[in-house]
Image (cartoon, rainbow, N blue to C red; front, side):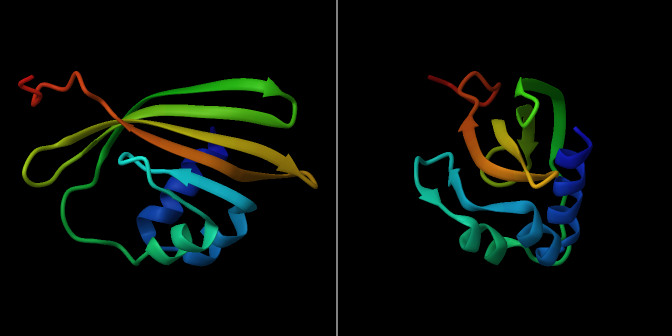
Length: 118
């Protein structure tokens, strides 16, 4: 959990070097629209602190798959136009040479949010 929170803090402050060193080679990201990207695309998106409201992150859980692999999940609200985006996020961490590395990330839109009218 500490590694996950340190990673999110690095993203928030725009520390691309930390992110580059924490993400495993062969990393894959599945975005809310189903597109996939890798380590270089993730690192390119890391920018110094952005203006505007910070996302609300809550309901963190860790599922330990074995001593060298764990999945961290949480929920988030990303404020913005035209509506707030409610998401479920999952991060798969693996231990490589005694260091935790991010191997996989998936973001899923929360379809039961209060803004959904369907």
